[in-house]
Amino acid sequence: MRQRKRSMKASAALAAICTLLLAGCGGQSPFNEMQDAMTKMSEKEASFEKEQGTLENYEKKEQQLYTKMIQTTKDHTKTVSSLSDQALASAAKREEHLKTEKDSMDESKKELQTVKESAGRIKDAELKDKAEQTVKSIEKRYASYDQLYSEYQQALKQDQHLYQSLKKKDLGYRELKSKLKTVNRSYSKVRKESKKFNQYTDQLNEHKQALYKAADKESKRS
Image: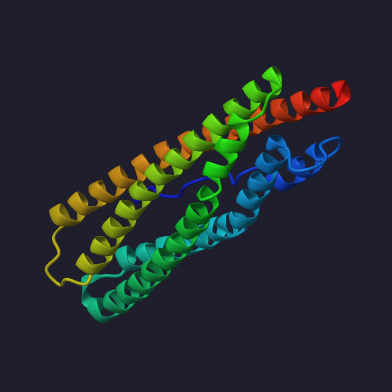
């Protein structure tokens, strides 16, 4: 039985927090520029959550097709071949949506340099410290996603190899077991990286909340 599925948390609503931070921060100060870039990050990541749901739907569809293939006897090779073709088509669609998700994250990442430069020019010590912590969290989250993407991409390829193999009339139990083991090993890595990504997302949310509090204190002192 294949073990798959990843569970990923989308980024927190940067735009909402940044809108709140605008209070008391007039003009294009370094902090203002930082929050503008963070807002753009959030906007460019908008399709991220949508693609996660789409990928999961395709995964469920392929799981159902795989179950049907395994339950079909060898006397129904045409049925297995048809189901395999459907699974391969679904995997191809999943590959497209994975790329869309990756493109969304890459576009969001383009704002990181502005965020870093702006954070570096903040003068208030406490606010600067919180800003730099937020930057580090953002960097770790992006790096984590890149690793997760790599592992998921590899797992997807293993799925495709499995579906293609199931079309073989002479597919033996040992070969099937070996391929299933490879698939499960790949998705085990995906789940591990997904967990890390979620942890970095939670850390980023915590640092953004701390950043908001520091910005609020700084604005009251001004």
